[in-house]
Every structure is written in structure tokens, then in C-alpha cells.
Image (cartoon, rainbow, N blue to C red; front, side, top):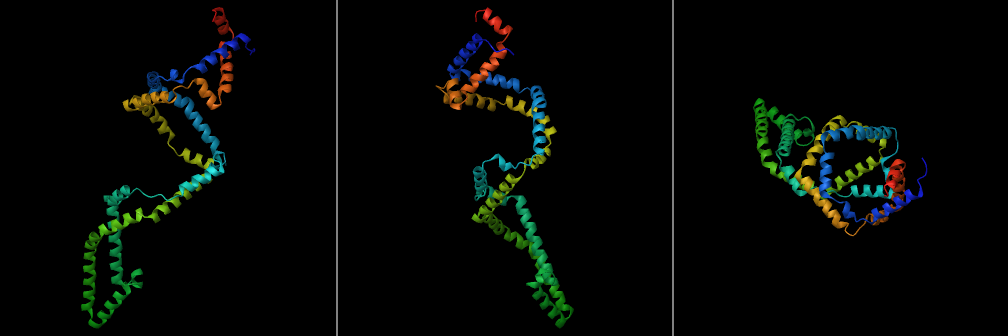
Length: 306
């Protein structure tokens, strides 16, 4: 490609300066943005660009990561990684309202009740038979007493022992029902305690530290388990649905107006300067503009006296 002539570069330089002098607000148009959203949110367009650009890009990135032994923590400065792990390991108290609702739920209540009933029933059965762990505590003593009575009084006291065990079994349900409120309260107190908060923090911190030590290849394995075909099939409908939502459209319009107010007094040039990109943008303006205007396009413009 031939180098652009001086007149073309002069025109491009002048147009770039004019662009930089424009207020940013001149390019913020909520109505135009919503119109563009309507076009971009069309399901067929979303499906087309998703299949043409996003899916191949995603697949390439996952394939590249699958061959990498780079650890996830290598993406972070050492200080940042250490701080993330430290923050993750801080005490994590559970929201009291959430704990109260959880403990009072039918699912938890039924689970606790079933556990208590099973434990007490098992204890009574073992106590009566003298077997299991109960024998080491009260079960053996009870069995010993019943055995002694049986030897002294024959089958009569053996029947008394069985009756006592039957009565205890009948009372298990009543005892559990009466104890449920106290048990639930104790569970709630335990979940709200500082000890639980610290334990959750330690576990969370250890989990984050372990995740940072994982490799990109391990992350790629997890990503490949995602049902991407289903995600891709749902994406067009999800985008189109949200593009039409009145609440979202109102939010976009309001935020664009707020952005214009935040940038009031700023020009395109001042923003490029603040970002350190003015010279880079100028060079790209020249490069792209020269390609667009070169040849017949530039000739027609000069012939027309532009």
C-alpha cells in the first residue's frame, strides 16, 4: 500500500482534532441506544453472532486452557492473591433471619425429629438388650439389673423388664415432641455463634486458597461439563426477552442520562488524555482513515472540493 499523501494526512489530523473537541454528551443518545438494543436483541441476530463469534472463541479458549499448567493464582500479583485468601478466611456469620427461618422450616424440623427418634429408639432397644454402646454406659446396668431379677423371680420379672422397655418405647415420641423446641433453639444458637462464624471463614478461606492453586487445565475440565448446547439454545430467547423489558429499557435510558451528567464538561479529547490513549487513538485514526479514504474515495472527495 502506498503511503498516504500529505493532504490526506492533514485532513485526517484536522478531523481528529475536531472529534476530540466534541463534548462527550454529543454522543450519548438514550433513544438511539434503545433502538440499537432492539436490533441487537433480535433472536436470529443473537443466534447468528453467538454461533459465528462467541462459540468458536469460547471453544478455542477452553482448548488452550486444557493444555495449560498455569495456576489460577498466576493471574494475580502475590499480594493480591494473599489478600483475597485472607479476606475469604475471615469469620462469616450467617444472617440471623436466615438461620431462624431455616431452623423453623418443616424440612429441618422433620429431619431433626427423625434423628432424635431414631437415636432414642436405638438407645432404649440396646439398653434393654445390653448390647452395643449402651452397654458401656447405662444399658449394661439396666440389663444386669433385669438379669438379676429374672434369676431371682423367673419369668415374671423378665416380663416386667419387657414391659418397662415397651413403655419407654411408647414414650419416645412424646419426649421427642416435647424436646423439639429446645433442640431447634440450640441448633439456631449454634449456627449463630462466633465459633460457627470462624469455622465457616476457615473453610471458605481454605477453599479459595485451594482453588487458586488449581490450574487452567482443571478449570477447563469444569467448563467442559457445562451444557453449552443448552446455554446457546436459550441465549437468543433470554436476550430478546430482556431487550423488551420495560424496566430494563428505562434503567438503560436513565443511566445514559446520568452518565452524560457525570461527564458534563468533558470532551472526547480530554477523556483520551485521561486514559493515556490520545496518541494511540490519533495513530489508529490516521491508519484506518488512510485505508478508507485512499484511492478513488479520496480522489472523489478532493475533486468535490471537500
